[in-house]
Image 1 (cartoon, rainbow, N blue to C red):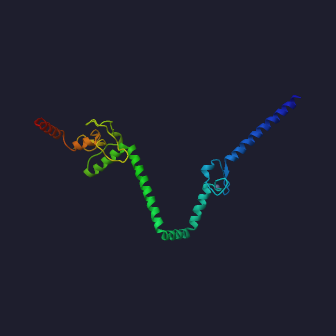
Image 2 (tube, rainbow, N blue to C red):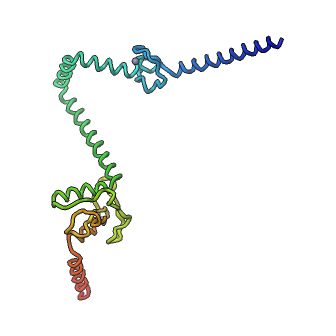
Image 3 (cartoon, protein in one colour):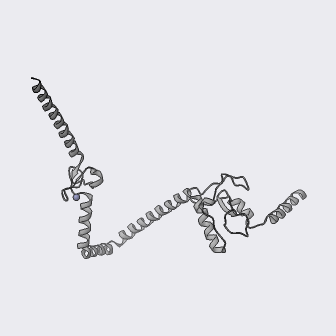
Length: 226
Ligand SMILES: [Zn+2]
């Protein structure tokens, strides 16, 4: 009797496994889709099929790859005709084409400006380095500093005002950081640079310590006389 029980148990077990297997494959089939052109079955349906409103399933019956191949083949085989059609359309709809192109250009410009702005906000040290490089070329100065040599403090070491990197429109203010050469006779070389505010840099310009002292003394004497 026991062997019969064991046999029955084995059958039950096999049936259970089979039903589970069936379930899994059925669910898998629902989650996947077969391309009717290349017959490849894709699990990532959304990633491999374009949306199509004309059909019930809402998805194109060909996979993205097959659609792409068909389109490029069609284009290369019908280049002349397509170009002719395009030329015709453009000459008949000059105004529309011009408007569309203008819109695209302004969109591209906005996108480019936004990208540039985001980059300058994220990379204030690099911005200072690029500007220094321009001055080096103009004034024929020496330069050996890298981005790592540029440290932007929270406050201007000369005036104590907060240093605010280009925010938003990239407009320079008195609080913007600027790269200054400690000894103006030397170039942008290691040990000869510090970051100060644009305001401090404007005041300092290329004056020596002596000159600044003389200006200070003169202004003080005027104050006393008044
Ligand atoms: Zn396909």
